[in-house]
Image 1: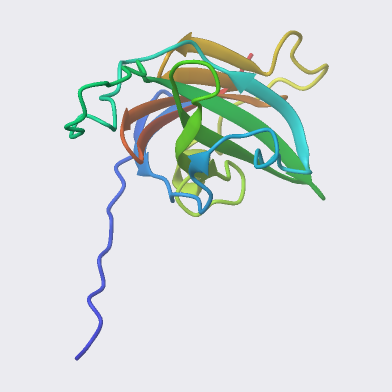
Image 2: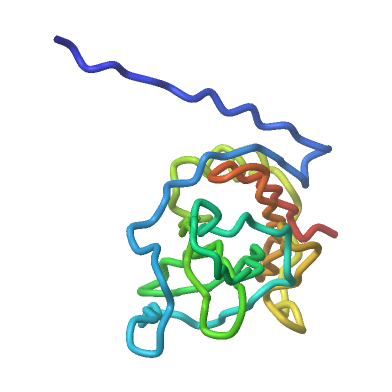
Length: 180
């Protein structure tokens, strides 16, 4: 039997020659699970980490319990973004964290975005090749700015990436070139 090959066609929309947008499926990471003092994994190449505001409520995982005593954990979604750098390769790790009562944090999902080397992001930069970029000093302020519980912008020397989680592993990525 031949393997089934599924190709995703990515539609890149542009606004002039300085803004490109696409909805990308990001690959899920391998380490979801409960966060404890001894199991919390931090990328050794992490340069910056930012935790976003609380998002939507999540259903309690223990709703099927028939016990007379039940604890309502009050889980809520929250995104955490880590900017990592290793030998001129930069990537973002986006963790979807379920946060409830004290010490009940758990990583629901992890996604990785390689903005410069990832095949799924390359068409966005190809669409911006002719944008007249600003040369000079880098941006001032924080590299990650939260726009909402599901959206943030990452400000770099040459571009600003706006990333918004649409559904599970689907993210809308907008690249804005720093232009004159």
